[in-house]
Image (cartoon, rainbow, N blue to C red; front, side):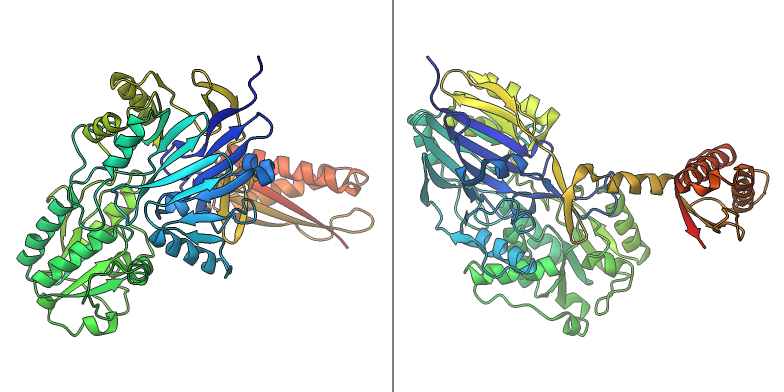
Length: 554
């Protein structure tokens, strides 16, 4: 008998990678399913995509589903979960639902994009919402940002728990503890599947509590005698407040440096989670305070060149300077891929005479994601039949699937972006592959990754470019020496001869060798000159630069 409806899960970003999360749940007959979307985040550009500021999942599949896509639900406010909501608003124009802190940050993204009427509905913590065949309950978790939520998604064919990002913090410094009662209740009622964070599955033990970090920061900052700067992830508002508490205990005023620090403080005040009586010193006033009375809370923990700490390290900040006897505390970890920038930043600070303290030296950072003992506890609460690891690279997902089977799950599927998984009815299985590309935000323009622009930039970075301008008259005679410009190549070859002059000679020889009639065909002239330039430079230099030929008819 043909199945009339099914319940499916589709990751389009964040599975096989860390970042750029975009997940969807579908219910109904194939070809006419209703969908809800969970999170839409970004990842940052890297060396593989030079000039690209942000990358995000391409929502092509969901866009083609049209009005069957009912809503976008945000679990929390980290960039890899909400960063794309405004950039791709025309591609995925959905009503958005989020708890107060997340909603406030998402609205700012729309404002920055010039959209004043952001389609965001603010919902309370623990809210229950209905969208077609879906009933969604928000479940409070703990993480490294205010208001992290899991989603219990109920359908006529079963219930799933989508964890979002989480950890188990027994004593968080901001917000309530994990609502394990709601998770246990879902398990008691029979949980079909859990779609779960895999970031720290390779790490044994527990991630640790923010309270322990706060206690060490209090004592560590009290030990310092010079100026103190602390850098951390601005989104970890609980950590920001712990640093402010430590500064107060050491009789230091706090100065916020960096746009994201200021933004988080504004949003915390807006939604009512700012500690009473907490005030900040303006940067242009902080420099007048005695060195033992000031603490700078800075952006730039990942070595971002335009962040506040990088400017201080380069000694080009307009208001702040650090030097001998001062201390910079990195209350953060090194995100893979950022090592070079962070080490450069640290070396610049050391050259100024600054002492560096990192999480390798002191207990001043804990992860916001679950290690293996926390995963074991979550599975003990939830007891799902099916485990679907997400939010991780391939090795994380596969290891998580193995762990889930060891913990009693009947089924475990480690998906990749585009893997369409039927959860019910019947045993889970991969039933299709959906388009799962990515979009590049390049300046102000958003385009698909296969456009060729980034590939050309990689080529230019490796071998530079050559431009050749040729003037021909109506008789197809060359009326002036060709103009050649070479960018990105060494000036001379291994024998000390000019590359430019040799290329110019080769272009002249090619044009002289072409019959006048063939010089009347611009395409033939362009191909012959380009081939000659590439061949000459490949022989002299060993590289074939991008070559542009411009033909002027005079």
